[in-house]
Image 1 (cartoon, rainbow, N blue to C red):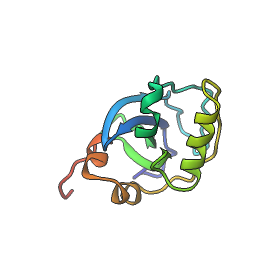
Image 2: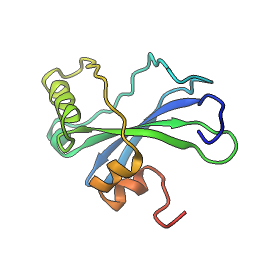
Image 3: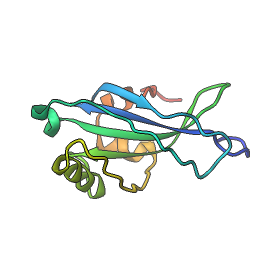
Image 4: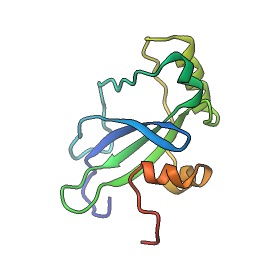
Length: 131
């Protein structure tokens, strides 16, 4: 989002366990919009015995065909998340195989990674050193 043109956003969801990305899914790219609408399901098959040990890191990313894609904002959903992210996770567990929609506030990447680990940053594909 370094230029003044509207972003080309997509959503990247990463299934995380112990700071490592196990799987990832992406939506399609929505061109030139600040208000994308995705009618897409991102499905992860997680064994029942593992649901309390995983979480989802959800990133809204601005696609850039030249250079690198820029993370617009992130949220975390899981038993280790705070507030709405934990509540959403509990609703999903209480209603298996049923889509549960929920609005989440995005935070800057720094804020979410600061609460996590160095592995969280690696899982998002970000460099660990100074820019």
